[in-house]
Image: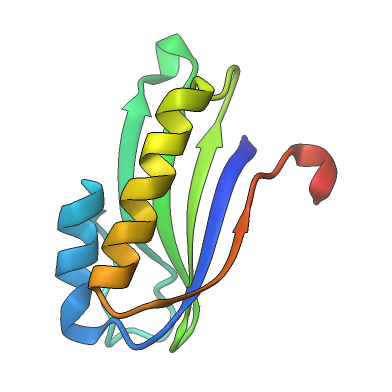
Length: 110
């Protein structure tokens, strides 16, 4: 999978995790009370047979989060990716998160 976009954010999601998931259309994953859980939401934007595209939310520390847009064959068209980025940024702001980085990424960045 290749990264098309990553939005890093800091803050205590706590009760606002549900709000962030709702605003970005993520399906529930993970438990905040489980220190081992890292993935907290996933949304399939394009199915595997069409070249999988997924949006997911990951926790790296109690207050360090990243929303990643990944793809298998072809990235989302730039207009769709920009719209999704706006949705993510608005949802994060509404949830009280502080954006620390917005990074378009490719496999060569890793």
